[in-house]
Image (cartoon, rainbow, N blue to C red):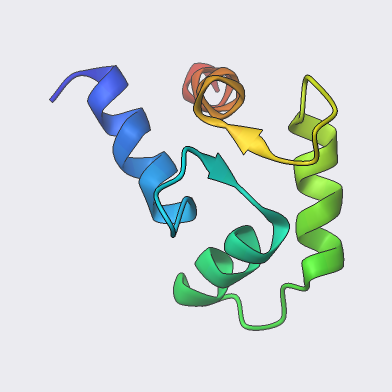
Length: 74
């Protein structure tokens, strides 16, 4: 599996409807599915706003990929 494949699989865990973007609600749902049942939509909005490069309030795969690569460096 390539790094791009791994990134796409990770992104797909958050992009629940498969439209190519992660909304705050999808982010919250994914966090809950991963065991964090206290994570709120407000927290999800804050995370997405911090990583949202074009200001649309959504996280695209390209924006996610930037975050993913930075995480892999650490």
